[in-house]
Length: 155
Picture 1 (tube, rainbow, N blue to C red):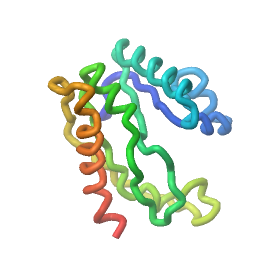
Picture 2 (spheres, helix red, strand yellow):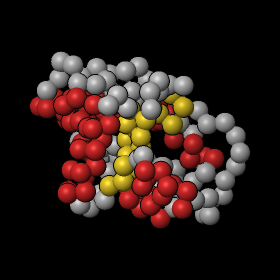
Picture 3 (tube, helix red, strand yellow):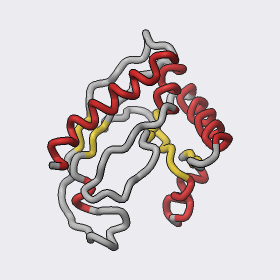
Picture 4 (cartoon, rainbow, N blue to C red):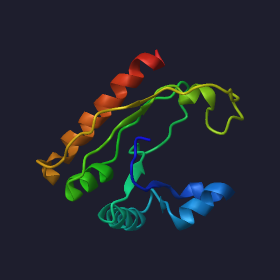
């Protein structure tokens, strides 16, 4: 409901190991190898093409998914913010507040439980007046916004 146009996910290429997700990541979504600059470059070029076609991108900007329990929000990568500035499109940050309580990793260590997950969709952050020199500040702004919502939950 929050995204009015078609969208694609950009995610780590390990998702190709999942039979169901593989179908999407080989057709619509964008897989990237986090250890390869070439793979990241190609992924962001494809993302740029999608944006120019009017699609939205869903990108998880953390450089990794840690093993911390409860989870810790890790540092964000610059790529998504540079892309938003280059394309002059707003960023809609989303805080997934308690999803980890329902299913941690694959569910094998801490189990899973049914229930409702609380998600906060923040107001759009405009990039129209920004240049690539502002990418770090934009990244920090989005990190702080998401972290502030999660911080009270993780206590």
